[in-house]
Amino acid sequence: MATVDITGEQFASTVEGNDIVLVDFWAEWCGPCKQFGPTYAAVSEKHPDVVFSKVDTEAEQQLAAEAGITSIPTLMAFREKVLVFSQPGALNAQQLEQVVDAVKALDMEEVHAHVARSQAAAATNTQDGTQIPEA
Image (cartoon, rainbow, N blue to C red; front, side, top):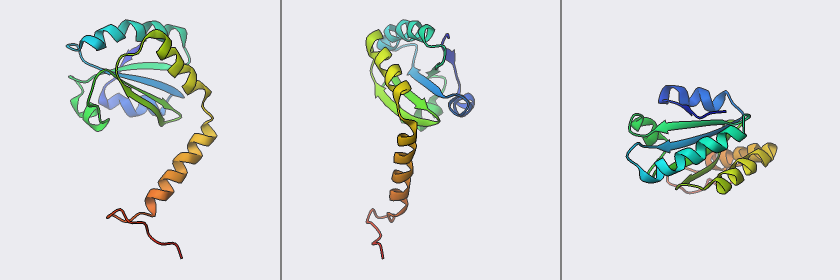
């Protein structure tokens, strides 16, 4: 599958509507982004079951800010709507393949359970960061 460019309007539906989504946050002026682009495209061809998307941080500044992008390229991976990987910096083909394989191999029941535990723990904290004592 070839890479697809997505906008802020398409981001949520892309992540929510697909099992595995990789997102490359990049910009035209970024040298490492230009080096990573062909690697990203080549690996995408080997994994038709994964959506390889690209977000131009210059055109989608609000989305980049909402995603907390401070360095490009940044690669994010989502599985079943959960962010499971986020790392700035260009990867080589072997490293990118390792990320894809690791995301595919995740035990998503365990991941969803961890997310639920984290959300429950966050709900027991007060706004000042102290924990509410349990009765």
